[in-house]
Length: 178
Image (cartoon, rainbow, N blue to C red):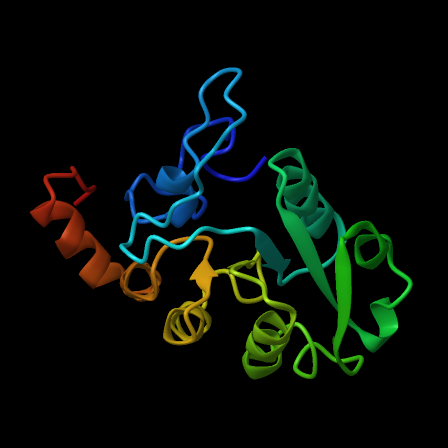
């Protein structure tokens, strides 16, 4: 399951306990809890009901399965060579993202945002790799009013800067290795 949804090691969706991951506080699932409000803790008050999964293969299926368990609709995006892939068929909805190369499809931020807006997705889960650690992708989601399921663009940017990340951790009282 995705972070905040029975996540095994209790870390955020990004792997850190920073508290900035939207799902960590949107869907804190207690044992046996089914009725979830899905409110955005970042202040908009809007709910999430459809999640675009900006990835492919097994990770996409895992995210879609978690969505299904929570009663959320899932949206797959696929490249021209993945049109018959299992993840594209498993999703509630599936849309062609672009051509066969990664830059034409899974790394094309503007196409992913366009599909999300056109299909009415209220959140995007990046999966792993591809755009999961790309602050520009998280910022594009934020700019277009789409929830990025993971840390904010600011946190992604900070974690990509090791010196800045160490400084922030020290300021927060987190011990760091010298």
